[in-house]
Amino acid sequence: MQKIGTKLIETERLILRRFRIEDAEDMFNNWASDPEVTKYLTWPAHRSVEVTKALLNDLVPRYEDGGCFNWAMELKETGSVIGNISVVGLNEATQAADMGYCMSRAHWGKGLMPEALRAVMEFLFDEAELNRVSACHDLNNPKSGRVMEKAGMKLEGVHRAAGKNNTGICDVVVRAMIKSDRIHRQ
Image (cartoon, rainbow, N blue to C red; front, side, top):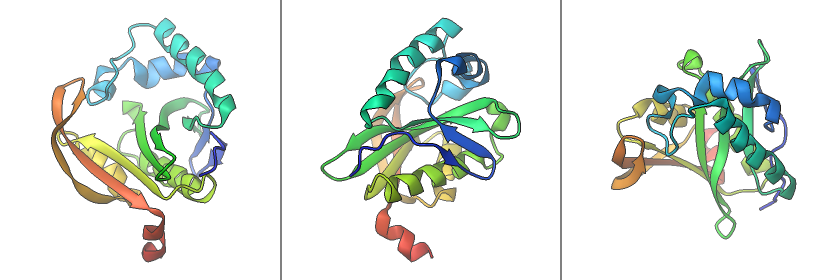
C-alpha cells in the first residue's frame, strides 16, 4: 500500500480534489445541512456553516500525512462542490479501504456518484496499490447500493442489526471489489 493521499482525479463531469476551507459554504448549502442527505449517515446534519467550517479546519491539515483520502466533488459545469467521497476506514495489513460518500440531493440520479466511485476505486487500486475496496449501506437505502453496483462492486452479504446511523440500528449491506475483479470485467 502506498500512502499517497488525496490526489486530483478528473472524470468526464467531475473534478475530485482536496477540500479547502473556502468550500464550507458549498458543503453546508449543498448537502451537509440537508437531513435527507444525512438520513442514513452516521453524522447529523450540520446546524450552521460554522460546524462545517470547523470540520474542514480539522480535515485540511490531515491531507499532509498521505494517509487521508477524502475528495471534494466539484462539478466541472458550475465549479460548485456538490458532495464528497472518502476512505472512512483503512486496513494497511490487508490493503483494504472502506468507502463513504454523500452528495447534494439536487444531483441524485444523474450517475455522478458511480462516476466518482469508479474513478476513486481505480486510483486506490492503481496508485495507492490497494487490493480491496468496500462500502456498505443501510438495507433501507437501496439507492446507495445501486451506486456501488454501477461502480462494479459485488454483493458480499447482509449483516443483520450491525450498523447504527441517524435512523437507529440497521441491517448493513456490504459490497466490494478486489483488484482481480477488474481483470474479469474486461
